[in-house]
Image (cartoon, rainbow, N blue to C red; front, top):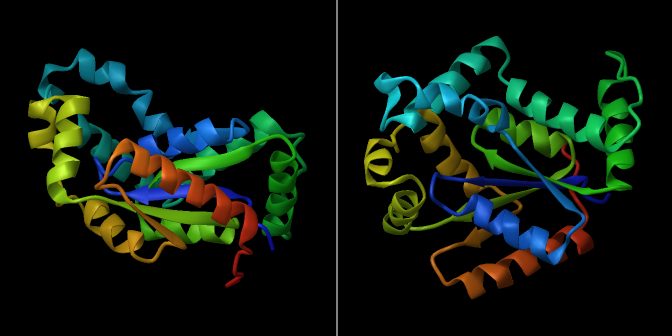
Length: 212
């Protein structure tokens, strides 16, 4: 069976979006969705709330934790619902045939785009997208390189205040090792471009294993 899309797992600063951007460059049909999109929409709150200044990532992690208290898969379901409703004519999803209906909707999505998720972090994320038939890609990088990238992206204060011991950071490090495909991002941009091409080739040529 072919994969229905790609999802990238990795610790903060590992280069998830950089890898995603290189995949999009190679395959313009790719459309990127972030599991944190709904949370990043709250960025203006941080800008007008001094108590979170310099600890933006902590704020986003807290919001994500609270949303998962409602439903552990709420961020996954939000990304999936956007993916389907924005790119295909929706077939009604029934409780009795939930996954059969979802697979049909994903088949319709694949007629128009290659869906890609960035930001998988938890075992629930891993299991959800594996069942949805996505190629699970893990991206790794040394602690030193990840910190340097966070400083470049967010500034030194935010990078220093980012919590590498948050439960999702610990969990994602283990999940990367279980991915279908693992990309090391301790090299150059050219190395990452080569890895992106390898991910696309794997996605196009390998068959996914069904565990359900």
